[in-house]
Structures are given as structure tokens and as C-alpha cells.
Length: 328
Length: 312
Image (cartoon, rainbow over all chains, first blue to last red; front, side):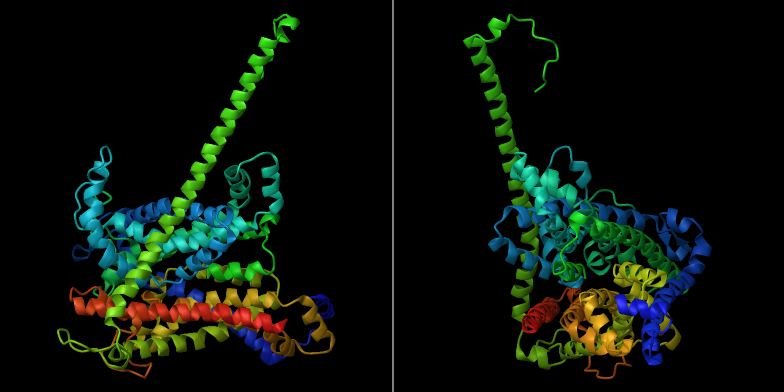
């Protein structure tokens, strides 16, 4: 910590009470033990399925438990597809919203709007899923899908499918879920860009937009990257909301309106009924999902550390806890 | 606008002739005004695009809340809070068991997560070095772990060996979900305590445990309370960790070692039924859940601002 504690530590006379040491070390060790237990138990329980299917578990697209075929390929494709589409919606909308809130709208209007969007980040995914299932599915079925199928040139993307539920709707629901977090993190990154950078851009004769384009967005790049990767982690790992709206098909979707199954929704749909090797295979899906989200989160945290290190981005002491809270 | 590098093969006097000056002036005016106009158009178009993005972001979010209020309010009544579910097809009934179950499950989960999270945060604040860096990184990565994975983990760890579903297993799963959030929030709150305070207390001869208790925890209290309330708000709406652990129940259950009902679980099971009555119950439960979360979030913010105002 500070100087006194450092001196004491150097002289080897740091008086740590035994109970206190137990508390601190105990907490840290319990935490690490739980994390290790999580990884080990999931890997261990899924091992029979991996041994049974080998690399086919990841690369084969056939999921047929009755025939003993466990290939997660389709689920992986659907997971990446829905996450990619969700980000395709959430990134531009999120950056635009953050820009509108921090750069364009007067503070009087932007402040309450930003707080409102921050609060919406706390809406549980089951409520978003319920809304998707009971409200969006009928709307998609009756209005959105017939409309999309009339668009020339893009028709083939939206062929078939008149169910409402499917890949596209799942992507939209995921985008809605990611947006508040995306907006909150991007907004904080934008606010962290120094006034001097903006004034420099303005002084060179830049328009409002050029200030955003040339000064704010580059300055906030690490923050935006962190926001995108963390939103990606959330979209990859969401299970229940997706399970409610994606339709549950287990073959490759024929178009964006086709039904599908992501890694997460597969666990929701298959876990309860699965026994023996099949249960092991479903836990294997969790392991694959864990690998995906961990990569996304590690990359996201690295971006975030870089964003916090960049001097122009360092938030003031008062802002930092607020920023951290918004992430949580 | 490129500058022609070749020397002008013109008579200097012609360059300075009024027509020539006027011609050049016109070009300059035209290009600059064109560029200015273009910049204005691009600037306004993109600004408009940002406003459109704002609307696109707000419409579904507002619609989501509006639908939950609109459809949920229909199902609310006193009986909704004080009665148990009735068999399908029978009108009436409530979700008292789910509300009580959520409070018990989340309460026990918080009792598990908050002390551990606080201890880990203390560890991170006081120690520097590789282990602290590793723990911090693990906590950060853990905070993004899919909640369905935590649910399956809790199932594998407890339901399989004991052969029983129980509310407390759901509490454990929620605690695993909360600890990283609590660690992060607590560490940020305690880092905000100035080093001088630590040093002053240590210089007075206080033991580190005493410093932690009387100085750090006390001055970091507003941040700690806020962060922990937000962690609870996050956990209370989670369905996936409960999906394979609490099993659900139709009766009022106060014993966490038995199967229990919880609000998110009930939204999931009732919302997926075709029966409109059950769907209404799901909406109403979603509304109650949202109000709980809103109260926790707003309460956390109000508490933080209240405490910091009082401290000054």
C-alpha cells in the first residue's frame, strides 16, 4: 500500500494478525478453488463424450443421440451466426447511440436517457426472452418475415421460414440484450477522450462530426473494442432467451429465417432429458461454450486494461467506480 | 485540390489580369464552398444517423418495459402476492412461493458471496504481486462466464452426488455468479480510500486487521453497499443457474434443502405454456421481478449519493 506499510514489510515486521491472514488467504483460496473446480468438473464430466467422438465432437454437424452421434458443429455455427448478426446490429447502433448521448444531445436530455439505458442493462435475460417469445415471434411471423421475403436480391437470405422464431429473431433479441452494456461502455470511453483532443479537432476547422470521427472514436478505440468483445461474450453465452426464440432446429439453417440451436440453447433444451453418454455430451457443449466465451472475455479484459492505461482515456477517480458498476 | 507542381507557362502579366484573378477566385470559392457544403451534409447526415441509432436503441428497450408493465399489470392483485399457484385451468392463484423462494435463494446466495468477495477484494487491495494479478484477471474473466455453465457446474457438483435438487444449490450457483462482481466492486470501492488513510492508521500502530476494519471498510462503506446491491440485482433475475438446481415447486417452501420455486424459474416455465392465464402470470411475475431489480439499482445509487453527501 502506502509508505508506512512498505517500510514495515521491508523490515519483515509487518504485524499481520493470524485470524486476518486466514480471512484474506481463505477468501482468495476458496475463490480459486471454486474456479478450478468449475473447470475441472465440467471437463471431467464431458471427457467420455470427447473420447467417444474425438474431433468429430467439434467438426461433425450430426447430433443424433439415439445413434450415438454427438457433433456440435451445427450448434457452433448457429452460435457464431447469431452472435455475429447481433453484433452487426448492436455495434453501429451502440456507437451511434453513445455518440448521440455524449456528443450531440444537450446534457439535460442526454443525462436522463443515459441513466435510463444503464438501468435497462439490469433487465434479466428471461424477461427479454419472454418478450421475444410472446411479442416478437407473432410480429416477426406476420409482418417482418413476409416483408423481408419481398426484398429483391436478398430474398434467398430470407427464404422459407414462416414461424417467427429462428436465427434472425434470436440475433435481434441478443442485440437488444447487448445494447445497454454496449452503450454504457462506449459512452464511458467517449467521455474519457480528453477535451484538448476535441478542441484541437475543432480548432482545425472540423465539423462536429469530424471531431467525433477523427478525435473521439480513435481516442476511445480500446474502450470500444472492450465493449464489443464483452458484448460478444454475453451474446455467445446467453442460453435461455435464445432457447425461447431460436426454434430448436438441429440441422444447418437454410436461411436466416431458419430455426437453429446454439450451444447455450442446446444445453437448455437437451440437459434435463439427457442421461449417460448424452449427458456427458451436453456438458461437452458447455465446455466448448466456455472456451468461446473465455477467449472473448480474455481479449475483452486485455482491451479494457489497455483502455484504462491510455492516458487520454483514464477516467477521473470519481468516474471510475461508476464505470466499473456499469460493467457489472 | 492538387497543387500543380509544373511552373505556370503563362505570361506573368496575364496571371495578374482581372479576369484571371476573378477566375481563380471563383475556383477557390467554389471548391471551398463545395467542400464546406459537403462537410456540412456529411456532418448533418451522420448526426442524423446517430439520432436514428438512438431511436433504434430506445424503441425495443421501451417496448420491452411497456409490454411487461401492460401485460403484467393485468395479472397483479393482492392474491398474486399472497396465494399459491392453482392447478392449470382453475382461475386465480398467486406466486407467493416464487417470491419467497427468490428472496430465500438470493439471500443465502448473497450470504455466501459477499464475505468471500470481500475477503478476495481485501487480498487484492493489500497484496501486490503475481497471485493478486492472477486472481484479479480470473475474477474479471469469471464475471463474463455464461450463467448456464454455472448452472451445469452446480448440478454436477451437488445434484449428482446428493441425488437431490435443492434451493440452496441454486444459492450456491448464484453465489458463484456474484463473487466476481462483488470482488470487482469491492476492490474499486476500497481502492478509492486514500493511501494516506491506510498509512496514518498503520503509523498509529494499528494492526492491518484493525486498519481494514475501522478505516478501510468504514470509509469504503458506501461503495461496498452500492456494489453489493448491484450484484444482488444482477443475481435475482438469473434463470440459468437455477434451471438444473432448484427444480421448482408448487408449495410454499421455507427449507432451502428442499426443492424451491423462484421468480425467474416460474417466468420460464409458465411463459412457455400456451395457456394465456399462465402467460399472464409469467408477465406479472416479470413485472414484479423488474420492480425488485429497479428498487435495488435505484436504491444502490441513492444510497451511494446519500452517503457521499453526508460524508462531506
